[in-house]
Image (tube, rainbow, N blue to C red):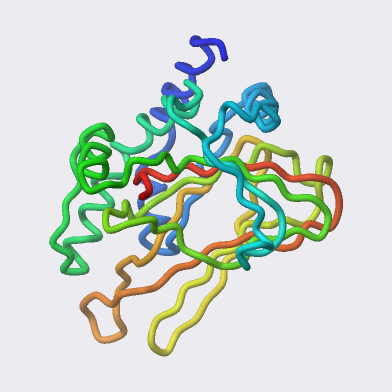
Length: 241
């Protein structure tokens, strides 16, 4: 993949309205990052899917009760585009993650740079890369879930839609649910090709009815594909055991 193209995504990430992103994350637990990747970049990532030497493992969802469809975890070194994007997004999200932990009374703070956080993961035995690419065909879906993978969990992650809704596929909406005492809610997040959604991995703080902070549990999934084929990339910032 062209290094210039891989580096360009860093500039795109820097120009996003991060104040609006933070407000949406605080209110809903998710936020759209519009046009994070170009159509050409989406095509380049989709073209990696058949290249088995790029990946450390393949997961058939039905075999594990995760839904239907499949995904592959990238091996290190990651494709430069994804590696640059992972490093560019993490320092924008770490201050939000640190504030959330303080509000929830969690005694964990994340370093400013991704490499320092990955060192923490690797020292704890979480050494396997977690960025992945997913492929869904007609009738496939992803059950509501959380991507945890070990003791060290970064509380935000990113999914990027690589296929064009309405052209490459129909259905396949990104879905989030939240659950707290006395309240349940679901979001359907509308994405176009190249858009990303940054969202809560596990729990986030929310304002309680009587003031103070309450803990909200979040899960995410993908609705059933009605036609065509859908590809997406998931960027998870903690590595796996």
